[in-house]
Length: 402
Image 1 (cartoon, rainbow, N blue to C red):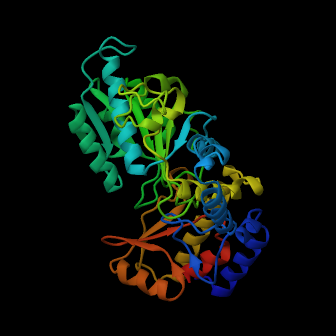
Image 2 (cartoon, rainbow, N blue to C red):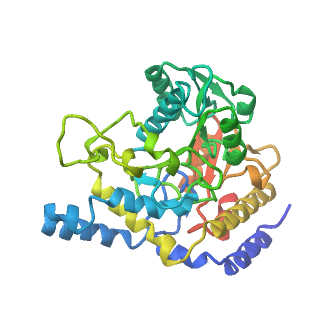
Image 3 (cartoon, rainbow, N blue to C red):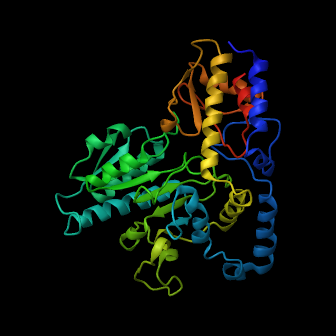
């Protein structure tokens, strides 16, 4: 067993050599070791002043004029274009607004509609596409939404473990809803391989990126993903309840038929026409009036990536180094048999968190928080530690394990 001083000394050396260490200063942090950024990211220090300007000047002084003069009206697409490179997408394919749940609903129903349209004489002919596959280990709300989408579209819903999806696909599969990273275990699923399998079966792939965007490369365009959704309050640090985003691959945008056709996605939103006509491009993903205060707080938070020229590749490299070091420290400090890692050891299968199973996990996390180490607990027996490389250092990792 390593002595605490040796690992603490190694952590100090790793922090000194960390190319992202200076980014930490751009966040509001204290003496707490914060390892819950996979639930809620820390506050970027410049955001309060930016939000104050939105409230006092843009709303308080310009009022209605800010829809045009402050760029409020086009903010969902403009901020979407800022998120796009973080998920490997070109501009014009991401729109920000609504919650992850709402965007999952829009994406999944639209995917089924496209698949069923294919079966009526489109590019992909064959049996009626009347089945949706959903990640059997998914975050519960995705499952609830998928069940409702299946009822609405006349589909059967079949939960399948991600690794078993290729064998479960068939000529009746319309769409597949998958998580890039499992929220409980931190397992990273094979987005390129699973997307290719879904396409080979003639179906559409919808990916939930909540636990990967901002922590690791995604490659939506590179891997031909059809539709994707994600939240912005985890690794993108947009703030509690900050709006989610929707990605619609460019060549699918003319066929994207949203089940929530609101006035913001109308081709002529101020025409107030009784008949709906969808706008072109990613704007089709909008619904109603955007939540400007949260949206512009997110816009400010994204400056962290621009001002420091932070690359997703650098973030991923540090994430793997942090989680490797944490697992080493846990192995050194924690008595044998006390905890068991349920996060894959292989880098290709690991997100940016480590999940440890122990029988009294709820009580253990409570005591950790009392000692200034904040992670979280998932019933019945999982301790989750999220590593946000923009502000988590190796000394944090060693302290948490100790």
